[in-house]
Length: 81
Image 1 (cartoon, rainbow, N blue to C red):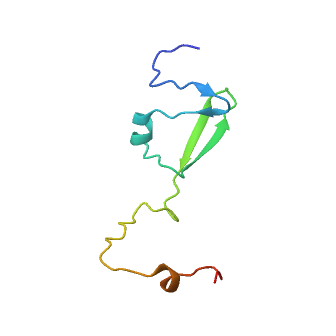
Image 2 (cartoon, rainbow, N blue to C red; image 1 turned 90 degrees about the vertical axis):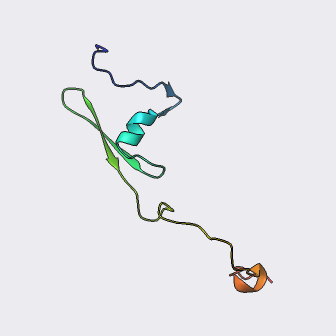
Image 3 (tube, rainbow, N blue to C red; image 1 turned 180 degrees about the horizontal axis):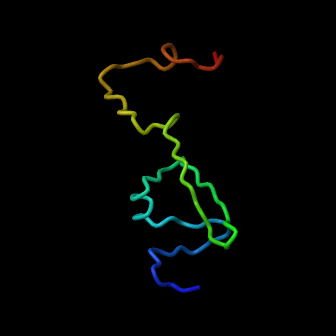
């Protein structure tokens, strides 16, 4: 296999490999996204990024902290008395 045209390389550790940061940024890959792997008939590996934007905190601005709450009375304590 020739290394001509190689954009990046990763080393496999155990059964994991890192995705180089510039590839993650270019493809907008974030925590929680999935990768679908497919081996083509000619041996080429195809990877599809499946972005998981629902159910994450991507658009959560956070709590600004200007309102005080009492955890024992204002929040669900899961039946703990």
